[in-house]
Image (cartoon, rainbow, N blue to C red):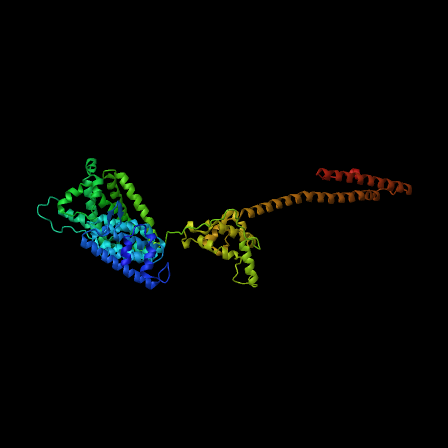
Length: 601
């Protein structure tokens, strides 16, 4: 211990002699790092030394953090206790000793000191916040530091030591990460012990309505525990009736701009108290104070915001009638805040912005407080002139090479039934069919048809496996591709009510082709009939001379020969003329219905 006492008087920074002092006092097995039993021995020595220094400071009547401080030959000598803490902090930072040793000494120091000296000790802690917050020290001493700060908060008065309590809370907020669960009220428990006490019986000589006084301050019972309002309807009715009385009074007694400017808000902030002054004698003055009105009205908005907070269970949500009452009361409160001078509109805008941001923290707590911190990515410095070679893969890239290697080691990979395969069309479209079912009640924004990748894959499957469904895409969109057997009857009728454009076009072409065929048949039928009649006429014409010869006088042999030759010639000439006329009629598209029998004869 004497070695450390002498080291406290040495000039210079601690890094120049701290490790050497430890080696002389402990004589460790290793030169730079102590073992567990050596750390325990050193901690006991330092705690005993710290206790002696505090005792000497108290006996001398000096402040603890200033004990041993002097000025010699124009050189300031640091006080002994901060000097000791600096030496231990350096040893912990360089990991020569156990990292939690400095936190243990600080806890002992605060427990041995009065509240007046604790302010100086805490000022030292704030000055070393960056070093104490390093990861190697924070992991070892965070619980000890939290216990130390909580003990200080219990010893302080929340009414008289407001600034010191705020310093401790601000230190904890910076020292611990944002997602530290010990600093988050996960369950949302309210501090019901913070009661606002007010007079229950009317004093003598009071000049205000005492019933209004009790009604006004009874609102604090509901502000203290908002959860009780949503659970008990009778308490909600009582709260709304009392709130209406207060709001009516505020509206009946509006504040002027002169009254608003008469209160200096900057001076009021310097003398701010966290507890209300509830004396009945001050009620008349408090009603004329704009900042007092703002405190009460902002409490109302915070309560309404809690009742409407998202993420609650169905049983915790307010009823429809309660929601309407909250909305009407909230509008009245905001209107009063806007009317309260000075700068009522700006004040209301800032409060609304704060409450809107508060919703993000509500969701964060409801999700279990996931961590925000992300470790920085360390970029490896590339040496000058050195080029990073690209790896060469057997199949061209890393993914294909790994897949090829995996297949080589597993010969049955391609035949494995668990292997990824192309699903059937009916199986693939089941999610979209469920979305189209109105009885399922799925909202439109969550339908699978909004997923472009899903629709694109489905169209590829339908083009390969279901051409009938794929053809309905042009008329009905992606929902028309879904197989009909997957759809309910009411939805299926929508897509089967009218034929598609392709079927309409096919029927139209079929009708047109039948009409053309009927017209061609009508044109071809008269021509055939005329051909048949022409043949019959030719036969009659050829038979006519024979009938006349029979009835006439029988000719001679020479006459018969001449007559037969003339008849054959006339028949050939008539036949050639008739054939020529018929051929000409077919070319012109017209057929002569009557044939000249004289020409044939």
